[in-house]
Length: 262
Image 1 (cartoon, rainbow, N blue to C red):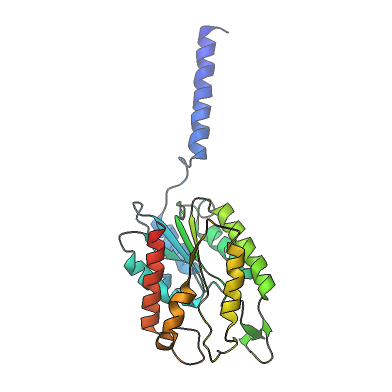
Image 2: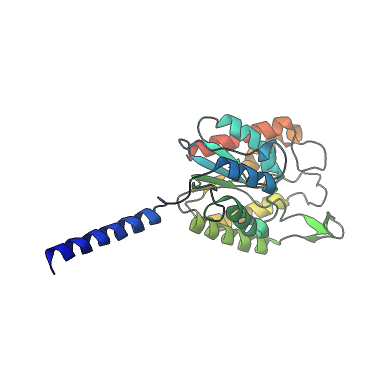
């Protein structure tokens, strides 16, 4: 090959390799646009302090919280405790039962992240703190809590199957993230609307059996942390939710566990 043609060939090849490399590393990916993301989040997310839009500081790790109304309650405290240490996001609504986890996560991904949203979020999760269970063990009929005539949302075996799928999904979709599973907080000893006392223990036992197969996933035993204080922290009798003190103390504990895994 003549010298001039050879140099032309080498130059073209180098440009192609450079472009391919840049494309694979996201060099040409559209930059994050806060206005676009804030608008998309406003249309997606529920209202309330826990669902406030977070404009991430690129110098800090990104933490994601997924869970039901218990996690909604403690999210603001987690943000306060980790201020200046991490960007703390949470799922855009109540995470509900285990069978909804993956489709819910996919909805958020395709709504908020690039390449689905031009100018959307362009970062990875460094820590994902997640829980499902309290909505799995409840009894429902016609969309309402009904212990007497309702059907349990997910049996223990179905819950275990779903949790296996969740773990596989998270490890595949977010291989760089540190995963933390939080055990399900207790149903009051006297029971609660649509829920049976003691079921949290059974579902947590099942969850830990599943998690034993995923040793890289850390466990936040929020059940054991909360149970001794339940009477002081419950918002009212026959209710699984917590008062301001309970939510604050849970948030501090969750923040501590997350900080240990950053």
